[in-house]
Image (cartoon, rainbow, N blue to C red):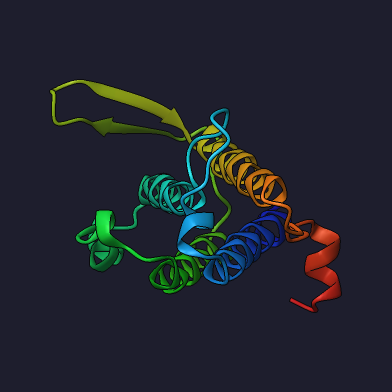
Length: 164
């Protein structure tokens, strides 16, 4: 089962890296563009994807120090600086899924600064990480298209064509 998940997560990492690469070639105005019905501009959306995915992965035992070099400068992070974070995050998922079978029924608890706690089932976290990334990458593609530019093909087929 983990092998199937590894393939899905490898595609997820590739798609995020590809979105970052495409956005690196956009102008400042283009990476600040928004449609009003999306999360935000591509630059902010990419940060959001990486921040959320880092949280999801951390629930499986990845310490925050793993990505602290990026989160310490989160607000100033440029798009090119996001690529190493995305690559390292992809490797962290691959490492997790290369190990023992993931117990999808395991429950993780997040203790928040306000004293509240939230519980997450491992299977829901795995699903959410993929869903979340897909939704927001497509929002970035919609913004790019609205600017009259060709959006990248982030499909699994494109990933295969590029020979991941």
